[in-house]
Length: 498
Image (cartoon, rainbow, N blue to C red; front, side, top):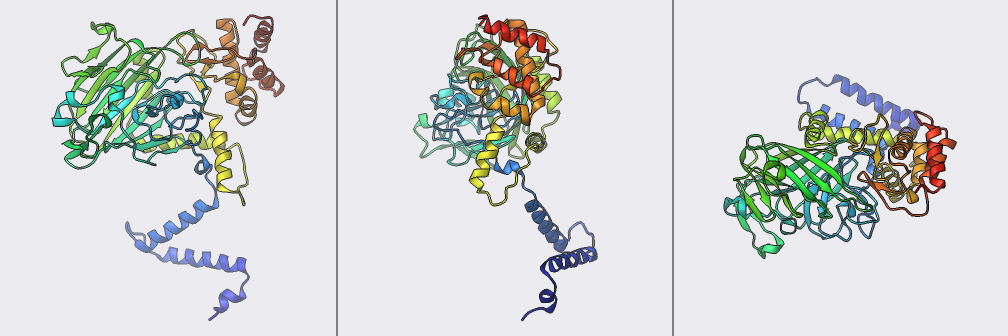
């Protein structure tokens, strides 16, 4: 039976009338703390409002390119951010950016990464690793060496979006991570039961795992993906659980070395005991390692500190990891200034806002377009803003008021599309990159063709930074750029100073 009101009024007026009717009903509802009809109407309104405007972050898939040689970074980061936490795998032929979307094992969650490299394994410094407990509640029976602690992931459990990465492991642990400019924030979730299964591939008991007391042990390893560390120091505070340390590492695609440092704080559970480990040997008798603390110089391989907690009352332990290329004390300051508390959701929301702001310069009509096409487009734009990375204030090589960017992998590739695109999408940041390139010339005597981890990279096809500078000049990027010095750098390069 037709309703006269709906039949006689034009469609636009019918819709308007329905909206007015809902508004009238809404106004008549009492305002209590709990009102199911009002709650339902509020939910419907929010859903409709959400569908009216597309959030482009929904179309960014950081996992695209994490197999078959893509070497892209899918973890949590800000635009051009220095802190880049993600799960690292033991597929070392593919893991140049840490994570690989295959069935390789997870060896830890490190803080620094590059993206899209074609050289050797890159960075992957300072991995955390979380055990849900140790066999017989004996910390010495937990696994510390990178190869020994490697654990399968739960299939298809990796989740990635701008500013967030999560994965579930076969040891009952879920790891989530987000980031600010120089700080990673992790949220480890453990089972609520008093006993949890403990099984590792090398133990041969993965089909019938033994049960262990729920007493999480979280370790920090000084290792990097390339196992390139030389020397280094690390310590843990028995009362607070704070870990600090650092070491010297090799770049992945060039010559030289660089120093990196970290500072970790925990929240969420009572500390039971702390200690150190050197390869497979753990002790609670020593709380520091390295020549600075009177022990022998650390050789390559796994070495670090650990904290064992009582069962977490809310089943979660948070770990805040500040990083620096200056000192461990600066790493601590970075963490305290950027993440004063341990509000995981707030940090995720701030990261999402930063990415929305960066991508908002593009106004795209999505009408009638395939979702896969939209994911390809927005994921590609997102990737242009992962590297080079903003290391301003973290350059240990010279003192300068100029911006400093690193991880130029490599300008003979990026001059073709990425940098010309950024002059349009993000001219402020591209201007800072140009100033950084000129400043590198000022202090090192040449424009880099490729540069990473404060080290000279290899050269291919001449001086491609010339093209980046010329493109910026033609597009009228001027803020703070010393074009006379830029010309000197280009002329010197052409004259053969490289």
